[in-house]
Amino acid sequence: MAPPPEDPAVTRALEEAPEQRYVGERDLTSWPTAVGAGLVHLAGRLRQRLTPQAVLLVVLAVGLVLAAGLTALAGAVYDAVTEDDGVAALDRPLLDAVVGLRTPTLDTVVTGFSALGGPVGMPVLAGVVAVGLAAAWRQWTPVLLVAATAAGSLALTVVGKAAVGRVRPPLADAVPPYEVSASFPSGHTLNAIALAGIVAYLVVRRQRTKRGRTATVLAAALFALLMGVSRVYLGHHWLTDVLVAWALGLAWLTVVVTAHRLLLTLRAARHATPDPAPSDPARSDPAPPPTPD
Figure 1 (cartoon, helix red, strand yellow):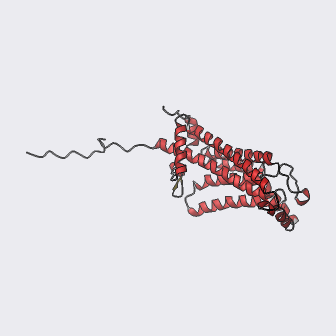
Figure 2 (cartoon, one colour):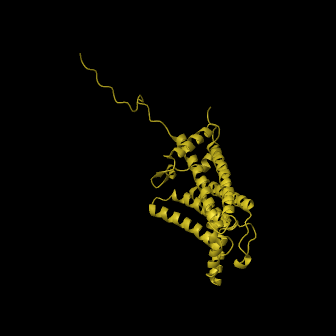
Figure 3 (cartoon, helix red, strand yellow):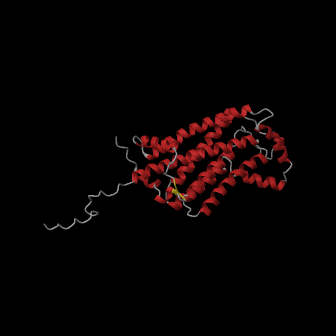
């Protein structure tokens, strides 16, 4: 069965230059592991019935379900360590320690920075960056990937808060403005690592120097790290809320990047053309002259 044709308008909007298949010397369409080869095989089977864009959406949907399951599992693990041992034993002592570090000036600075990772600040910031990259590169891939990342990050936050319903640290230990939603996981932290990560992924594919790529990845990692630290410093989340949010955000980022790599792989296979046949007159060697009898 022939695969369904792509919409030309969609194809043009999401088409990427061949060099964007690479991060440095790493070919993003190469899958050396058995798991990677299996994913490519499944994507190829789906391509027989769906367009590459539809395959991307299917992979994202399946990944989101798996990530949501991971979120619920993380909630169950949290319930198992809420006694006075394990990771949760660090929650109260660490909060007590950061309370002693606060100053009015530092509180103001950290509150302003933390607002960047909020349900309004982070999507707006990432959206502006995505639209800027889309306009500069004349393609809609940045908008698509950032939107998918933001939607999944929000869904995982909602699932986690509903599944666990953990109470935030006492208001007496928090810096205003106060927040009243469930504490687990930290939505600010999850948003930060997922969205900063996808922007870094988009940018490093355009950078030609290892130093530039390293600086981009470190900047995204530092932003996500400081966002999590800020939530604990302000007393808006426990340490375990932040630790789980880092893990979930990284998991969802991995899903989005993997889905996009599969899309690149399908398109690379579509554009691949066989070498000219040896019988091609334009490439055949001239016939040797006849040998006299």
